[in-house]
Amino acid sequence: MIPVSVEGTAQSSLWTDHLIAYYRQLAHVTLTVIDVETTGPKPPTSRVIEIGLLQGSLTEGMTYEESFLVNPQVRVPAQITRLTGITTAMIETGLLPHDLWPELISPLSQGVLTGHNLAFDYGFLQSEYRRLNQGFSRPEAQRFCTVILSRLLLADLPSRSLPRLVQHFDFNVGQSHRALADAKACWLLAQHLLTQLQDMSERQLRDLLERQWIPLSEAAKGFGHSPCDLQHHLERRGCEYRYSRRSDRYLYRRGDLESLYQEVYAS
Image (cartoon, rainbow, N blue to C red; front, side):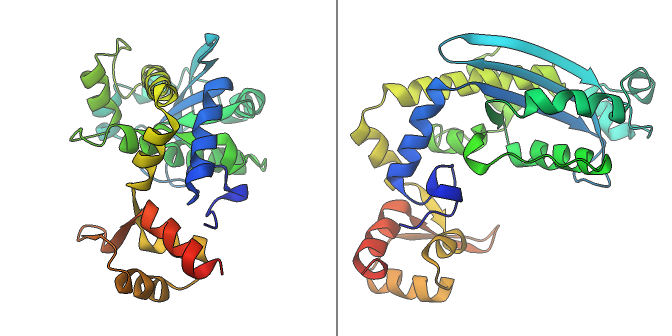
């Protein structure tokens, strides 16, 4: 199956073999785990006010950890203070963006960038660097989101939010919604999930991946055909599907999509 991601090596790949290779190699590389606290949900209208950063690997353990308050010279909304405990007075003692972000470009560019709902943190990092007229980009194969893997390995849990997972696994990390505590929680979760994955046989992992639900729209990108065309072939084959009313989209099993591609689209 054609992968959605660059070179088929990242988490959005539609190839089961590529995903297995991607997850297996994460046990042997340095993970750069990040978490940001912000003034709101979306850049560029919201700003980073705290970042937690740590590095380590499954073989060496944690080798570096640090957190920084950031002073983007804006007020911290009351609802953010209630959530995080971070106040405007606190960030006024923090580093200015033009002093902090250039210093972090080196560690942020090392290893595999890792986060829980990484797209959120990554989007804010890119926004902060754009404000300084400096680019920041990591290849998709060097980004790892623990939310995506937790949905696969912890599918039976009612929630994969980080605070809920901290409670579930009884991680001793401190106050949730502070950057270093959440980065540590993500690190411990990554350790747990990647160790669990390494302990699984190739067949167990393949069976798990092939049962994963893939949105039709995402699969269509990999196939290079329209969702309607792809859905027509899936319906003719009587493939199992789900319809999500919340997101208004159809989902199909990875294994069925892979079989369809080999039999119809790859010929």
